[in-house]
Image: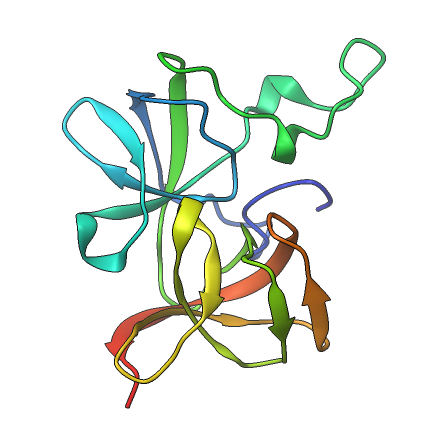
Length: 151
């Protein structure tokens, strides 16, 4: 299914949270920290309960809205929708600038984007595509991991 954050099997509905507001101009496909009332941009794995900000279904590309819904930021105070991360599921996630290879271990970086994991980082996902050089904010398919510290 094109232009959607969740890329897993279409015969299942992934779990989401939708009863919280966003506390800034947050982009879909970036990690957020879940609190009791809002979603905040995540910049580290240890910042709290993580989720992946979804796009808004009603922001689809059509003759009224020519913008890509996956790259259209929420406005602060909007009600957000975020995916509860499940191991072994495929999502589109915004990447930090860099070169990535299939199966590469990824960790959370600035702006809620994924970046290459180094020794000592907590791995949250694996790059799932042919090797590529990505600009900051480019989207990539990733498979979520059971979090662990890279040796």
